[in-house]
Length: 173
Length: 66
Image 1: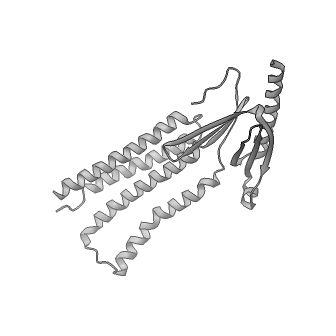
Image 2: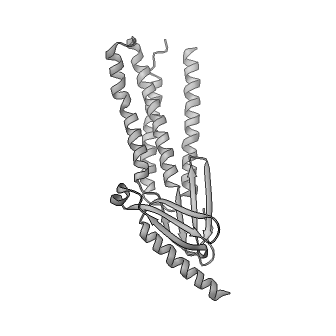
Image 3: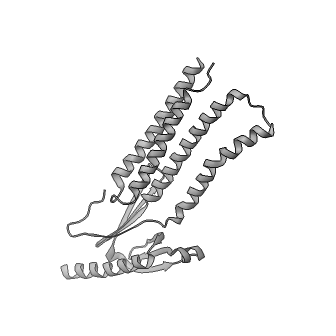
């Protein structure tokens, strides 16, 4: 998946905090149980007259609906799970999975790191211990790592590794 | 006639569904870093999908086409 250099080691793999996907799971669970309440209500309210023979058809369509919902949930989870940041001893790799078929990978070397800002954006983030990292690089672009767990540990690892990598590079030249 | 049309529609749905399941499994095989907790989630999803697929197949043949 990722080609590492000769002496390059993976130091940390970061995913977004699980709270990011909880909302989608809760919404899907609500949509999954919705037919259980909605179908009897429609039958009872006499809004539309449903023949008795429609029972198996409604049941079949409910199962198809659940299959589609499960698939959507699976795609949401893949989107969440394959979004990651890999900190190695030489670089930071940002892998952005969007949906099922779109994937973007970017990376920058650790010697480009100039400054790191840790941001804990709100009360929920404080309680659940996640936050954002804003990395200022030597180039014009900056780099954001959002909604990750162990934000302080990640910052320390990046700064230490950046220092070590720069020293190694300086000694090597 | 109705049965044949419904069967074609259902078969098409299963083919498209199967394509998406295969695509997801390919992504997992290709891009996951290590065998961590993800394998339990994948197993749970596959079990649910397989169960619902078999249930839909059973229900399809109980539909009153006449």
